[in-house]
Amino acid sequence: MPDIRDVEIIAPNFKRRLSGVTSTIVQLIPCQIRLGMRIATLGPGLPDGLAKLTWPQILGLWRPPARRRHRVWHARRNNEMAVGILLRYVLRMPLKLLFTSAAQRRHTAYTKWLIRRMDAVIATSDRSGSFLEVPHTVIQHGVDLSIFHPPETADDGIAATGLPGRYLVGCFGRVRHQKGTDLFVQAMIELLPQHPEWTAVVSGRVTAEHTAFGEKLKADVAGAGLTDRILFLGEVPDIKVWYRRLTLYVAPSRNEGFGLTPLEAMASRTAVVASDAGAYAELIADGETGSVVAAGDGEALTRAIAPYIADPALAIAHGENALCHVRANFALEKEAKAIGAVYDRLLGDNSG
Image 1 (cartoon, rainbow, N blue to C red):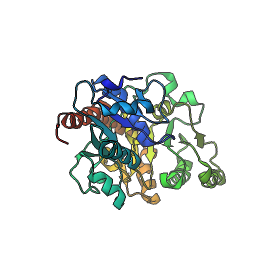
Image 2: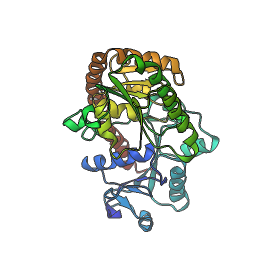
Image 3: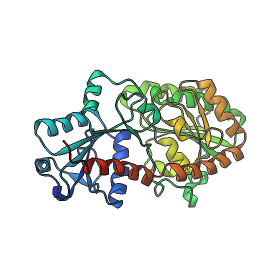
Image 4: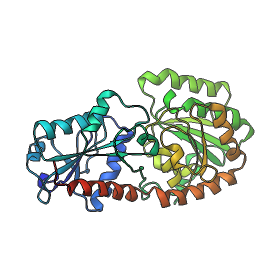
């Protein structure tokens, strides 16, 4: 447990279930600490070993940290902004308020009210920034290159899976309409019969409300006679190794906040075909590291996947390009340093 007197930045996480925001916090905080930032998180659903404050320690926020006149409260959700406003304006705790917005939609009046009370705002993409009505800094997410990396051992190849074929194409994430899992499955049903050297895998949780959706996909695959070549893995213990086993990754979301999976795939030296949901189009160099199509357009998705399935050498070449692209532009350390610069401005601001 960190000493509250040493903590200068608090990154609350007020959601118990795993989400993209939670994943971002879990990856960023250790990196930020390595870079010298005095940061800790607060809230449920976080792994052991992460720098976490307890709720009673919140009482210590009335006193500024040892080296500063105030702290930064870095919110990523509405409820986290609301608590920050309560702590600062009602309880008069010495805080500067920062919000990171990944939303790709018009904000509600309530969210706009919250955002206007922030001292600084970060957008995770140009698109998310376009929905903000306040000054902001665009800082795209990065990926931990020490965790997501190219194949290194025999376990990182398709042979280790026992699946048929020479090449794997995959789609990872929760199995539901929003994620476009059905578009991927339909593309595989159309393409795989002509290309026996490829096998497709779907990995991700099916929640209760999406059980019927998941069962229909399996029925469609069975009806096409492809149950041995389009596999539903469910949740796997370690998704990272599956990225390394792929030759092509497909991110077919109809709707997304930011969307880290293309970066995770590219860092694993895997080419990516994606929709233009979320920030996907800002992550992929179209025609060099993969391809981008309109969200929800299943026919366009199938057409974009087809050249890679027909020519695995193209997928491999674009996977090499993807690795270079991510290393140059999307390292987690780059994101952490950019956020650190915002922290420094707020911590050095003695107004308010």
